Length: 116
Image (cartoon, rainbow, N blue to C red; front, side):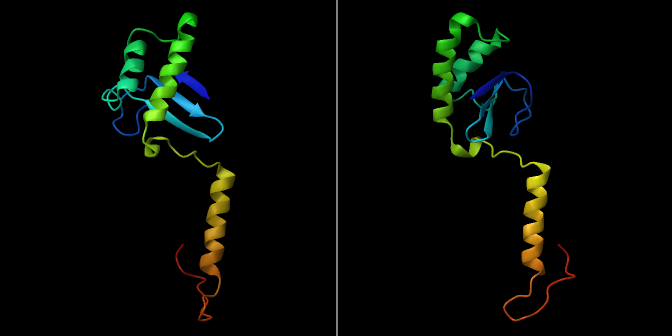
C-alpha cells in the first residue's frame, strides 16, 4: 500500500483530502476526507492526527499504520474507487463493445451504421 499525505479533492464533497491510500495489489485508492470521514471513529483519529501535521513522524509510523488498517477495514467497498483504466484499456473496451454491436444479431440483421 502507498499512502500520500494531502493532495487531491474528495469525489463526494470536494473537500481537500488529508491523505490518499493506494492499495497497490488491487490497483484501487481511497481518500481520507475531513468532512466525509469525520463520523467514522477510525477516520476521525487520522483526521485529528493530520490536522496538525503534514507528514507522519517517524516515531508515529506504527500507530498510523494501525489506524490506517482500521480505517480501511471499516470502509464500505463502494468507497474504494476502481482503478482508472489506461487509454489502451479504454480503447480496447470500446472496440470490444463496438464489435459486439456491429455483429449481426440472432435474426441475421446487420447492426452496423447505428450510433455507438
